[in-house]
Image (cartoon, rainbow, N blue to C red; front, top):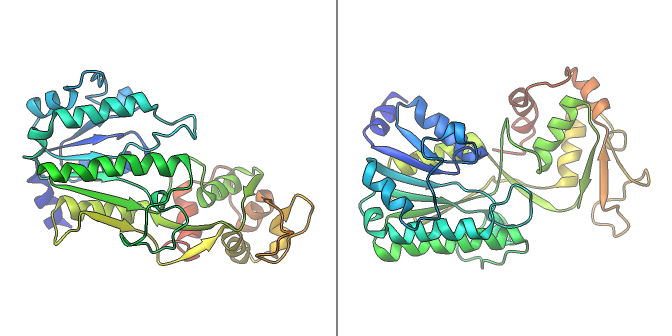
Length: 311
C-alpha cells in the first residue's frame, strides 16, 4: 500500500465534481489519506474550495485548469434526471457540459478524465454486462446517465484520455437510502418498518471500497485499460431472494420476517404475488441483538458481505 501512496502522491491535484455525494466523498477521503491534493464542486459548500464557482460561466472549468495543477478530473455527479428531489436540473448539467467543451485543449494535457456512469444505462440487460449489450435504459435515471456517458465518451475523439466506469448498485456505510440493502439495514438498526416494492426485480451490487480500489488503479494508470469499465458483482439477486438471505441469516422463517400486505407470500414468479412486501425490522433487530442506531459500517460487515450479496 505504501508504494501506491508514493505513486499517487506523484500526481498533481484531483478535481472531483460531485465530491460531497456518496461516491465522491469516499473517493476524496481515500485520496486525501494518501496525501493527494483534492478539491471539487459539491452540494455542501463547506466541503469544497471550488464550490462557489459559477458554472453558468462557460469557461468555469478552463479557469480551474488555468489556476490549479490538475492531473485528474473525476465526474461523480449522480442524478441529473428528475426522478428524485436530489436530482440536478437539466440546465445545471448543460452548464457543466459547456464547461468541458470550452476546456477541451486543457483537458488534452491531463492524465485522465474519469466519468461514473451507471448499469442503469443497460436497462434490464443481463449482468455481468458487456459493451456488446445494447444500451436500453428503462428509467429516467438510466436515460440521463446514458446521455452523460455518451458525452464523456465523445471527449476521447478530441484527444482527451477518458475512461467511463459503469458500476452496478453501489452500496456501503453512510449512504443515503433508496436501495434495498442499505434501506433494510438502516430500518433494522433503527427499528423502523420498511416496505419493499417490486420484490422480484433482480439487482446486482458493488461495494464502495471495491469501486474506489478500481478507480485508484485507473488513476495509477495500471493498464491496459479499456475506455469503458463495467463493474458488477458475480452475484445477481432478486429483492425477494435478498430478503430470504437476510431472514436465513437471522434464523427466522421468511414468513415471520417478511409479509405481503395481505399477510401471505406467493412462491417466486407466481402472478398473484404482492407488489409490496414489508419487513419486520423490530423482530430482526431483537434477534441480532442490535441496539438502536447501530452503525451502518457494522451492519454491512455483519450482513452485506457475509451473505454473499456483494463480493
